[in-house]
Length: 253
Image (cartoon, rainbow, N blue to C red):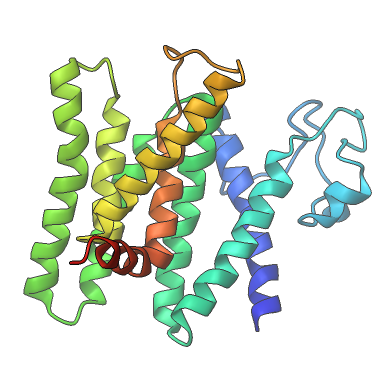
């Protein structure tokens, strides 16, 4: 079953690559054949097999011989692995697995898009907030309690960045971070949203300091923080409770 889910995840990852590329080029990802981003030549089915085609083609387009971005196999592999980890975490709850696979797919789109183009799209975050909020309520054991929990998490996630936006007059973060913070709350609830925020800031600081120390970036350089927020949310989605218990145990709570 894990192998089948991994293959399914690879296929979903291949589709996510199409979504990411066509969101940027303003093309529809619901119709039209896959094509090379360089020569625009249509890809044959055997050149579009997740991971395998990239390896067999040596990472180059069959027609124009230009390099295929490593984003494509990386997203496919990441999706496959994360889908398996989700399955292991939620076993044997199919509905919960489907919910979390959808959440992970959305977060991977945000992760890659912000990493490449420093932009968090409202066309992704706003529908995802609505779907996540309603979906989590649909699966809740206590509608009223979970509604209040999710609402609090959305206010914490979105309000955390809204406050920074107001204090800095938009210099520290953009409006996309506010919507992403609200999405994190709708996905995770409280207190997992706090775990995700902490993971994002710690990992962002470590990576940022490492890049500055290596001479790859300056302190004033832009940082695709949505990438770290997405990664932190995925980790909190799967292991937030474990991390929270570990932390509370350390501080003796």
